[in-house]
Image (cartoon, rainbow, N blue to C red; front, top):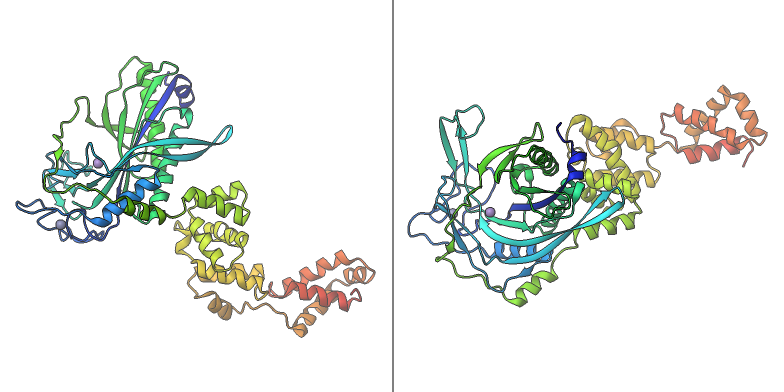
Length: 499
Ligand code: ZN
Ligand code: MN
């Protein structure tokens, strides 16, 4: 009988390993002056250096070194006072030089860690993911396989190559083996990549778009029989391209491996590809025999030897850690845990913060973004931030605070702005959504309410103040929600002799 996930984690202990490649957002490539702009015509952003033409010489991009140091410091790594580039030789058409300039035994950053928090059965628990190294290299070009059914090389009639991406600065961030995550292994993997992405974004070194491939994760996992201490053979799921897929890939691999082991079969050391539809993986390249990349020191580049003072200068400019920032904002805004998680999962934290910075009340800002605006966004299957911006939301919240709008009218203004009727002010003008606080207009509505509910009015006259609620409700209804409710209450009670 096939083992289910619950059985798997009772019998086996997973060990994780995560490799993340992140493209830097430098203006130019790692070793030449070519543009790194995304989406240009194929092969328009190339030169003799990134095409590997004979006689061309690479020069290191200083901004890329600075970004690498930032990343290393943010991940608690030591920065090597001296590191070198190496040639990683392999023959594949996406690398025009037939080697990739990378770092091998002398990476720029080593021995760091990143703590991630997971919701467990026993509450929130912190898992430490140790980082082995961060090294610098260059991205490869892109192949497009044409004519086949699957878009893969097998069955294709021909292949096209685009070298615009070849030579874009790439950082490879490699963890040590991560033991002890047990049944939480898939969540730890996801939380690690999420936290890493947030840190990279806060550093401003990459646009970290997993779907565009500027952040790619290779997820390794192996299983060992519970308590045996014997490390199993690992598989490596390549280029997983969303946070959710990282979690699903580890989950799926754990089940697949456990069922093989259960049947007495062995795990083959190989790369695997994640299948979005089924959440399963299928085999790629076998890694049974270690590939020989014939690494050797890159003779065309000088070593990287950053000054200690430069490193300290960079350290002093590091932004607040995202996890620290989240805790600070949660305390400042007095947000319950559940709502905070909802805001983070909806990726609306920055947006709510921007709205609050414009003077809006934090609770109101959160409620609008996660409530009405997110609801419409889900309906339309778009991002909430594509419907409205923090300026508009803050303006509406401030208009409610100053009494110019009621909550009910504010909802109509939001609807109008989303429908493209203009700015909040324009929607208010066009739809005539001003709060009515003009006493004579309100008095007319109050008299109407009293006339339609004379008995209620008598009860209020007799001292039953709570009964006034029904009359105020009638006035609000008659004015389409535009009446200033506090003023209505005041005028009504006065009129009925109950000041
Ligand atoms: Zn170039
Ligand atoms: Mn690499």
